[in-house]
Length: 358
Image 1 (cartoon, rainbow, N blue to C red):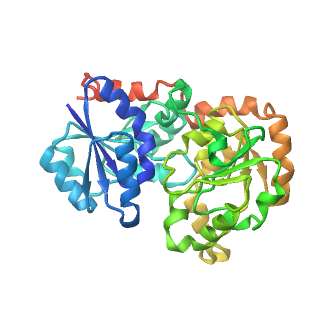
Image 2 (cartoon, helix red, strand yellow):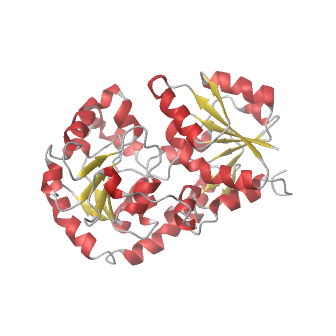
């Protein structure tokens, strides 16, 4: 039996690794299909080799499609929609593991694609997807990406190796690329929070895309402060930072849901740098980009409307982590599904032949 993982972007890989490990433990052959990405090629290959993954490179979705049709693996796991998949479905079972659990509309929209199965995080999302796509097959497995933290198999960070102080509280700032809070932070913000370690983990697009060069300018300024560690493109997985931090600051990134699923406090920056094409008469574009699940951010995290409020709330949340604990625990089942370290096992139980998925 062979299972292929379709890697359209490098940051998909940490989502797949726990599933691959469970498959390998059961004697299943796994292959990662990598898309060449110019400047990221070396980073991609180094990360894949460091995790001892078997891989094959392709130039495009068209080439990947030809490979899947020719090699006919038993299963192909995708992290995003894939066009013209009908010919693949004739010979391989296909499944979607969405690469994030954030509040963007694309989380639900990708199921328009003709991928046959989808592994889903919790009954809330499953019911919404089933209502919208009644002909599709959705399986509630939970969010496999978090399994290594829950199981205690993740290698812990040594903060001193990052140039940080082991005796300081550690904050993780994990913004998304758009709409983002990054440009709303002052250029000297680390000096205003000098009593804390600050780990900044940007989205890959913020680090490599030319259109986000203003964000990159800010990152370069912030990383000069001695209480800051800036994760670069070589730091593919956010899991070690989620595990090490006592508090997360984020905006519309799914990492906020991931962090609160670990029952740790969060601050939601409900302020963003919005392009002119998303303002005024065009503000509907921003509304359409974000899903209604955004409303849950305020339940699991402390909502702030500007940097001044953010600065005030950091100490409050760190000293009182129980403030939103009840809501975090209640909402985790809705937003992330079961957090028991067994999500990968449930996915593999479905993949390995049984009467339900023939």
